[in-house]
Structure formats: structure tokens, C-alpha cells
Length: 243
Image 1: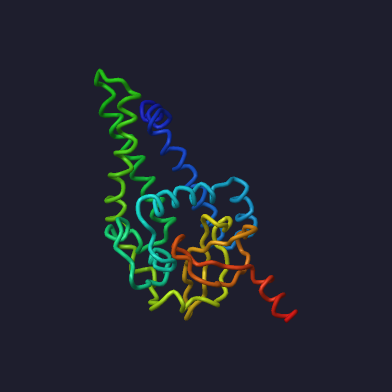
Image 2: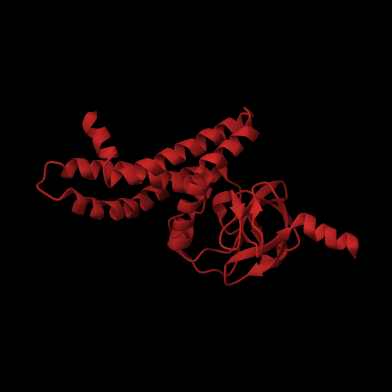
């Protein structure tokens, strides 16, 4: 047991140990919110711990770094709208879009932690430089965690509804609510209530960032950023009233 703790707190497994802790805190607050045990306070506490930001960062690295993202809402992971006309990606081929991105990131972190722990434990008795071994194990554990996460998410896909949208224009003009810690010109997600289900779309805003829970209106599709552009709902309504 002591050896396991030592490995978990040593390089490279400590990287996954920290992320695993963030994931556990994130899901703890999700569960508390789901059972209505002070969910409002849970969101505030989660923002204070920056757990959401960390999960978003990991998600951003996995979803935006490994592939050119599918059009917003095409992320079936969050019950998003599948939009036609986009090239297949690594995550799509692994079926990692069939469940929410937070579930995917959580599974990747869990499997990477397990693989890293087992690898370092197996190499512990070998006369090798632990730092060099760790530098090799860290990226390999991340890569091997992807297919394992793919296998794990497939039974869960049935629990997440999918809604088809033929074009991006179908969602322009609709009201959405920011679901990530914030939404700015580089990263952000929002939900749209459409036909009784919540669609999750990627959003970008030029100007002051929006915070979680703020309402916005989708104004268009940005091909370069592969996301919908939005404006704060109160600003749009204010302009309409003045007009």
C-alpha cells in the first residue's frame, strides 16, 4: 500500500493523481447538485476551487488539440446536434463524442492514472532512471487511455439523446445559456433547449466574457473558430427596445 501511494505521488503518476482529484471534486459537486443539496452553493464552491476550469482545460486539450473540432452541437457527447459536412476526427472514430465531454475526460484521466501506476510499479525493480521512464510513460499512458475510454463509453451512449440539425443556420437566433465556467473568444460551451432536450454547442464571444448561467443569443457561425458566435441576451434585447 505504501508503495502504491509513493508511486501515485511521484512523477509521472502525480500528474494524473492531481487531475483525478480534480475530476472527483467535480463529480462530487455534480452529484450534490443532482440531489438538490445546495446545488447553488456547489456551483459557487466549484468555481472557487477552479475545478471546472481544470476540467475545461483538460477537455479543451483533448477535444481541440487532438482534432479539428466538429461543428458546435455536433458533439453528440452532450446530446448536441450533429451537423452535416464535417470531416471525421480521432475522437469521432473512437466514439468519444457519444457521451458528454466531462465523462470522456474523466475516463481518460482514470485509465491514464491506472496505466501510469501499473507501468511505474512494473519498472520499479529495473535499473532505469525513473525520470526518463516517467517521461516516456506519461504520454504513452495518455494515448493508451483513449481506446480504453472509447470502450468504456459505448455502453453509456444509449443514455444520451441525439438531435439532428441540417445546417448551422438552424440554430442562429436561438437563446442559449453558458454552461462552462466562462465563455470568451477562445473557449466556451452553452446549452440550447430544443425539442425537449438540451443541445450543447461551442460558443465564442468577442468582447467581455460571459459567465456560467448567463443567457446569450446565437448570432452566427464562425468557420475559423469552428463555433457559434453569441451576444449577451440583455444587450440584444436592449437594442431592440431602443429601436
